[in-house]
Image (cartoon, rainbow, N blue to C red; front, side, top):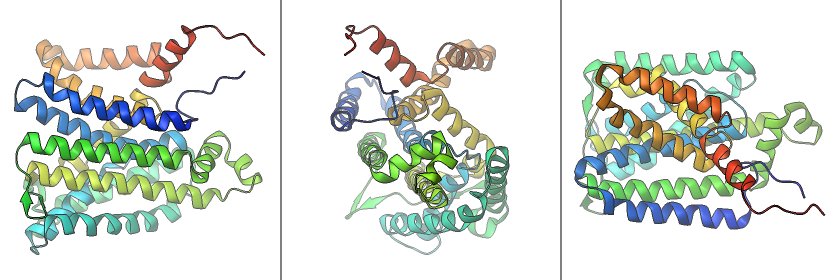
Length: 326
């Protein structure tokens, strides 16, 4: 019997066990937190993971590269900040309004640039991200420019979210929702079309799949994930700067996806968790922190070329009970 590559086919049981295991992990983690610093790091992990789950749908499943995804994160963050701080919108209403706005912009941008392939597409998305970053950094009348701007706290039904502990549960719930939606999308006809595109775009079109429509759809969905995470990050921190909209943050997000394992939803979560927490531990090495970080990245890619989660899944599957071929 053939064995399905980890991350591509997600059986129905996996769509239940995976989120259940993640929910259990989120529920039990606070037992190991000694102070609010751990909660703060966990919230940052959750926000990065939400963005990476959406980006993985585009990069890992559809095989379309994006080097400007931090731009959508920034649009969500600054969109919520401007509507609440400049126009007095309720924070929840601003978050809900900004997300479809970013989706519409992603649709308009995606129509021309997704006609490109390979390094041409990479350059186009890089240019998109750079333009968004420059606009945010220079339009100081709206965004505060390089100095950033303050963001009101998030209020939900009259309750104001304050403190790392409250935000931990909100971000944890949003991450669970993001993972559940991604898993169900992957197993839908749209998800099967995306996997076909990843294998061969020409073959997918021969099979009757509208490749342009499928690529545009997943581009918009991944932008919505990033926008929602950006809005949450803005209200959580209470202050935002253009540093999260730069090219380097886009590369960081792609690195998290590749490190955790492309075409693996939980790989995206694991990659975001490891690469968000790792710099916190590497401060022990002081001036050698960057060297050790690079060595860890190189070692993982050399010995686990498919990424962390798919490689470990294959390793444990190979060590499991042997199956007699039919």
